[in-house]
Length: 117
Image 1 (cartoon, rainbow, N blue to C red):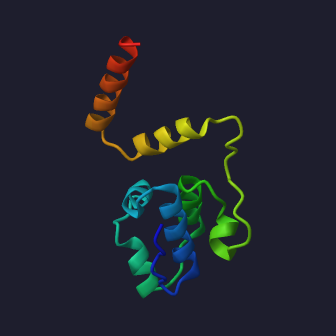
Image 2: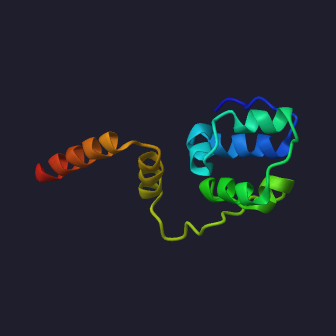
């Protein structure tokens, strides 16, 4: 996995790193916030501050904590993954980023596959 380009804003850098590690796009997460994909670039070029309520959304989407995003200290998962099959978790992540047409196609594929078993 390639290195992320550092922005000079450690919070933004940690958000980008965690998004890359989790396979989530910044655009997808910014959509959840109701902001454009250029939001983080605007933060870097402007005030450099991301309000706590937005950091909470980033942390939730990236399965980390606001504390980690702010300080870089430890990165414990904010939501327990205990008992969740890693394959199920990956499928859920991929589907969360997909539009309804992709989801319908995946359901049809899986149903077709299961009917052959």
